[in-house]
Image 1 (tube, rainbow, N blue to C red):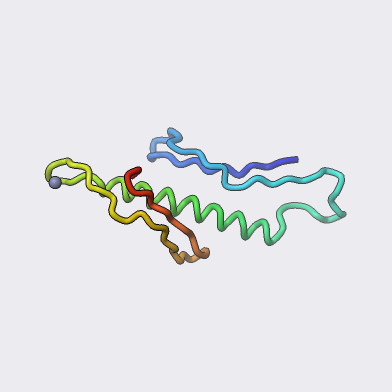
Image 2: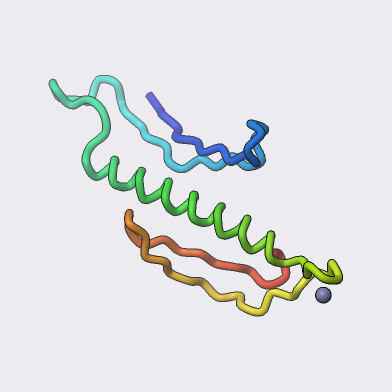
Length: 103
Ligand SMILES: [Zn+2]
């Protein structure tokens, strides 16, 4: 059995704008011991970390995109900072890499 955890981001209208597979779990049906059901604690923590990572990246992508256009003249501002950043969140560290020229 496989189980894919997929995140769908929309613009508030229900139309999917971005779809990301956060994690995929595999189980060999006959290999589990009695009582061994569901996700392990480690898998649960990894899942939360993956969701937080993708969620933060999507939020920052949207925020940065909303700030690129000059409100006065409409020109697209240049991206000056192309390095990766580490953010500490309530659910652990996440990483964000802005790539100059693509946003
Ligand atoms: Zn301007």
